Every structure is written in structure tokens, then in C-alpha cells.
Amino acid sequence: MSDVNKTIQKWHASFRKGTDFDSWGQLVEAIDEYQILARQLQKEVQSTNSSDFTEEQKKTLGKIATCLEMRSASLQCTQSKEDFKLEELKKLETIIQNILTYNKKFPFDVQPVPLRKIFAPGEEENLELEEEEDAAAGTGSIEAFPPRAPAASQGTLLPRLPSEPGMTLLTLKIEKIGLKDAGQCIDPYMTISVKDLNGIDVNPVQDTPVASRKEDTYIHFSVDVEIQRHVERLPKGAAIFFEFKHYKPKKRFTSTKCFAFMEMDEIKPGPIVIELYKKPTDFKRKKLQLLTKKQLYLHLHQTLHKDS
Image (cartoon, rainbow, N blue to C red; front, side):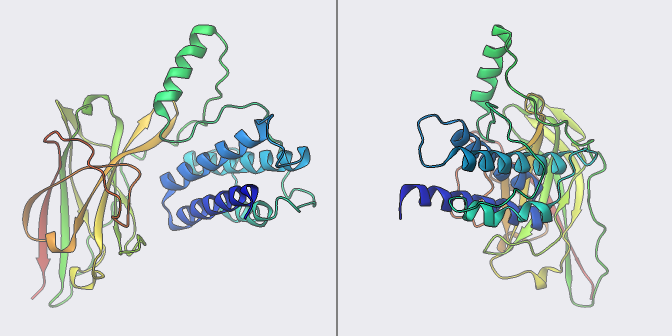
């Protein structure tokens, strides 16, 4: 396989990953993937050394990047004027796959944005450095991301399921999380999900309200999360994930800072302290990296409800 075909294959895999996240309701991950791919496409469009694609093909790639950003904007802001639906974005999959032979009219009336800097998630340090340089030079060449959606201060927590004879329900109280830069986190909240061994959701995903207070190296939540499946019905090997998210004003973007998880054999009444891991969230638990060597953890309290 030629290098250009390998590149196209990687783009297609990234596109599928993003739309899968999108369809599963994992919107932060979808936005991450869309922006990473948009950046890769823009780099190709802006490259003056590459002869892999014709100018017309580059124009099409630029339009795809624009559509990815429009979908990102729709996910980040529910009141966005650029309401670009997932079903519309999926129409571009065959174009990416067949970019070398595609010669039809582009399905949407959009234009590639020339010479635009796009920063993928995880490049915060480079972003902040270049923002400072641009500010000092007065160029202002970095285009801001769309405004964030209004903070859902009430979260999306669900009520406890009805009890069933002989079955157990789990309430998890998220008490606090320890972070060395806790005081700098803006609008912090947690996303809670239950995944099987393949990283697929087996429960509705829930968001906590924004944290109640910050104190030294701790962010306090003091909120109950009702797991939306009886413990006995959770798949073997499943895990409960906790993703800590916060708002980054320079990027106008809500980012996952770290995550933690609790496996089925850890379900038992009482307090539990679990380790924090570096992003991106690894739902398959294959490549885990501790966030810090410091004694900073996620503090939970478990309550089991059994109807006899």
C-alpha cells in the first residue's frame, strides 16, 4: 500500500472513530476526534511540498475539515447557528475513502478556510505559547473556537431505578477529587459511564452538576450517582468510569483532564479511593498511565440497596 493510501486509510479510521463516539453520545471524545482530523486535513491542504493530492482534491479536503468543525460547533453549543447534523456528516465518509477518484459536486455549500490554524486537543501548551506570541505581535491569527454551550449546572443525573426482589442497586456518592491544580479548574464536573470490556456503553451516560466547591488540592462534588442497572445484571468485566472535565477559556472548549474507573469486584458498601489516570480515557483499560505520583485520588462512597 502506498503512503498516500495509508494516509487516507488513517483519515477514514479517524472519521469513523469520531462518528462512532458521536452516535454513542460521547460528545467530548467526538469533538476531540473531529478536531484532530480537521487539523490533519488542513495541514495537507496548506502543505506546499506535497504532490499527493491535486488542488481540487485539496479543496475537497478543506471542505471536509470545515464540515468537521461545523459538527464540533454544533456539539459544543446547542444554540449554534451552524447546526450540522451527524447524519449529514456521515455522507462525507465515502468522499474521504475515495478522495483520489472523487469528482462529483460536494454535497454541502461550504468553503475551505485558507491558512487557518487548528489545534488538536492535547496541544494546549503549544496553543497557549502561540497565543502569547500572537498577542505580543498583535497578529491575532488564531481563530477562536465557537462559544461553549451554557453550563448545565444541574447535570444530567438520573433517579434510582425501581427495586426488584433479590436484586441490588448501587448508589455512588462522588465526594471529592484530588488535583494539584484544583483551584485553576473552571466549571469542573464528572461524566459517569458503565462500559463493557470492549468499551461499549451498557448504561446511560450521566453528568454531575458543576462541583460545589474547591479547597486546597481538592474539588468537592458531594453528589449521588444512581447506576442505571442492577449490579447482578452488569456484564462480566464491566467497569464504571469517572471522567473529570473542565472548561478551558483560551480554547473555549470543555476538556477531559483525567479519568478513573472502578471494576465490578470493587463494588462493596463503604468508602473507596481510586487512582487517577492520564487522558485520553482508555475504556478498554489496555494502556493506563497514572496522572501523578502524588497521593491524589478520587474519593467515593458506595451504598448498596437490596430488596429482599
